[in-house]
Image 1 (cartoon, rainbow, N blue to C red):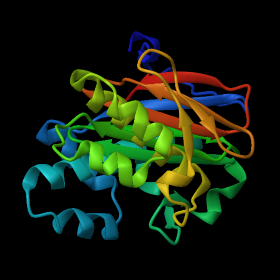
Image 2: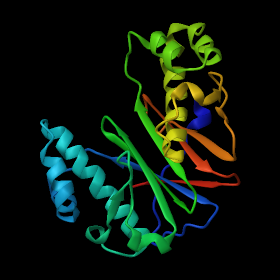
Image 3: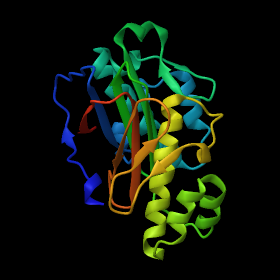
Length: 239
């Protein structure tokens, strides 16, 4: 899977996002209490209410770290303080920047799993990001048979056991990233065709012009980014 590893660099002081750029941010959701407090101070009242509804403290802390990081990241592009970033929510709950920031042209999408988060930021390009921790699944083949195309299920079915899990989550993240980019929750996973092999990057076989980038942001994780159109320069930042 070395094909999908990338260098994650500290972000420059002055972030420049051209129309051909897509920035991918890796976010550590485990933060010291002092940083969590700073993040919490930047959240809106509804975000704080959401955080308080988590039963387990670690889930609450992960939510605060994730939302605080997203605010800091987007604020750096918008040249505003994190607390000044405002969101609206689409029908399926996907956050977007509030209408007051429409002129910025910024689009973003985020995903989190376990103690890691990913955020993709683009300029006027639809974007979807999905991140999954490679967890053991006893019913993996049954899920693949139900939600994947027959050709995709056949790939997984005949792989050695040690490769099944990784390839399953590669299919899953590619499909979910596409769904998040289009915003079409009505489309089913089995309607999105992905071609991949254990050693070669995935290809997205759907109508329209879309770019697919697979990532391995950390050990035991799979991730994918789908962006509208081609000719994209991906850059990878550590928040």
